[in-house]
Length: 366
Ligand SMILES: Cc1ncc(COP(=O)(O)O)c(C=O)c1O
Picture 1 (cartoon, rainbow, N blue to C red):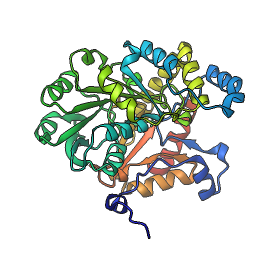
Picture 2 (cartoon, protein in one colour; picture 1 turned 120 degrees about the vertical axis):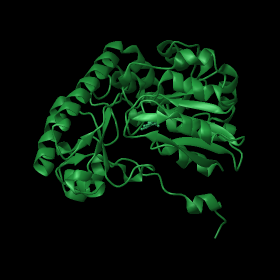
Picture 3 (cartoon, helix red, strand yellow; picture 1 turned 90 degrees about the vertical axis):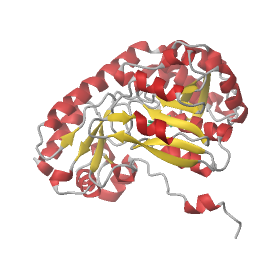
Picture 4 (cartoon, rainbow, N blue to C red; picture 1 turned 60 degrees about the vertical axis):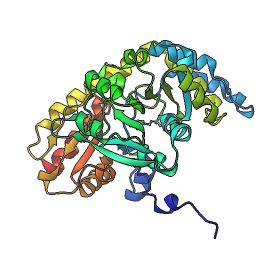
C-alpha cells in the first residue's frame, strides 16, 4: 500500500448539508416535494440572465476557459468598491480560495485560529496542509465574538485568523471595532469571511485601505444564486493577491461558471430582489419560530437561523431525521465543533416553503 500522509489517515471528514437526491432515495419521497433548507442557498433561484448566458455559451465548452478572468475581476471589483488588482477568483467557490490560502501561507506546524462554532471547512482544508487549529470562542448566548479569546490565542506561529461575519452557523455579526482590534494585534493574515454579507447590509471593505494583513472572503453561492457553479472570490492588497495567483489552479473556473457570474453581476434587479426576499423570509421565520416554547432561536443577520432544540427532548440528528421524513432538509449542527448535540440550522426559503416548514414543525413540537 502506498504511504498516505498521516494527517489524511486521521482526518475528520467534512460533513456537508444533505442533498435533495440523497433524501429522495433514502425516504422514498418525490424530489419535487422536498424543501431544502440545509445549505444556505438562495430561495430566489438563479438570475434569468445567468441562465441565458449559460445557454448561449454552452457550445464553447470544448475550449479551455479563461485563465486571467480580467473581465470578471473588474466586475467584482466594481461590485465591491475596489480595483481588479485587489481580486482573486476561485473556481471551487470560496472553498478554493481557502485552499489557496493554505498553499500560500502554511508551513507544517503553523497555527490558524478559529473561534468556535464557525465554518468547519477552514479546519478541514488547512489541516491537510499541515496547519494546526487553535480554537477561540464565539459566545453563542450573546451571539457575539469573544474577541479577547482570539487575541489571547495568538502566538508567533499564528499564520491565519478566521473571523466569519455574519458567523456561520450562529448568524451574529462581528463589530468593526473588534475586527480592527484583531488586525492590530497581529501580523498574521486576518480572513474576514463575508460569505453572507449581503444579507447583513454591512461590510468591512473600508478597512482594507488601512490593513495589509486583511483578506475578505466572499462567494457567488449565496445571494448571487450560483452555488452549483462554484464561484468565490477574495479581496486583499495587490501584492498578496499576486502571491495567491501563483498557486491557484489555472483553469479551475469553468467557462460556464464564468459567464454565469458575469451575467449575474449585471442583473442588479435580481440581486436586489434576492436580498429582499431572503431578509423578509428570515424575519418571517424568526417571528414564527419564536412562538415555539420548546425552541430557542437566535437573531441572525444571514440567510439562516440557529435553533437550540434541547427542550424538545430530541437530539439534533433525531430532530433533523423527523423533518427529513416529511421532506424538509435542515442542517444537523452536530458536526460543528463548539456546539453540542442539540442544535439545528435552518436556511431561509421562499415564503411558501417557510410556511410548510412551520406546519411540519408544529406537528413535530407544537
Ligand atoms: C461562512 C462560509 N464561508 C465560505 C463558504 C464557502 O462557499 P462556496 O465554496 O460555496 O463559495 C461557505 C459555504 O457555505 C460559508 O458558509
